[in-house]
Image 1: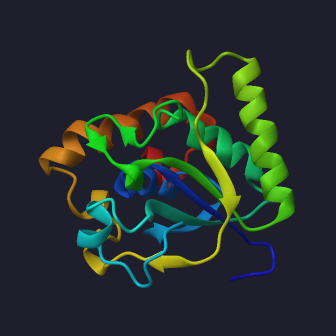
Image 2: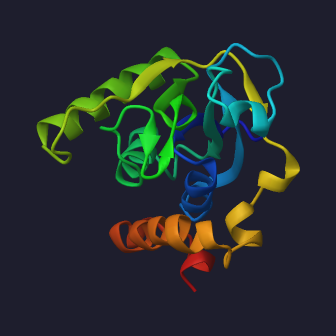
Length: 184
């Protein structure tokens, strides 16, 4: 990782959706699905899916802040999931699907609060934001079968019904921020 890279850790429902979108975002060099914010060491996907580990499905994103401001990364994040639903995204229900920003610094926490206030003031969502903001303590990488899931399984039912529409929405709403190769 170069000195110009910064890391963000975000949860907003299924990590396959977030990973697919952030991989297309200009300024992002790396995205990894995983688990964080729980109290069980080295959790498995099966354990996290029970909702009893305390962990959320999250993605860790490495990005170049000279190309993509952290606040802009968060604006994309808030556009690709519903930050007003407690412990759910669509049909995915449980605390593992909560909206959460796990910060890596005080500056990130401050930026997260500011972006949430901006979104609230703009009335982008009709209900109150329930996104949690807390410092990241540990990130556990998801099992290899979850890496690049949408890229490897674009025609699976879940990817067609849930992931693909989020990618399409992102590419339309943020066309000026899509990586060139992703748009082609």
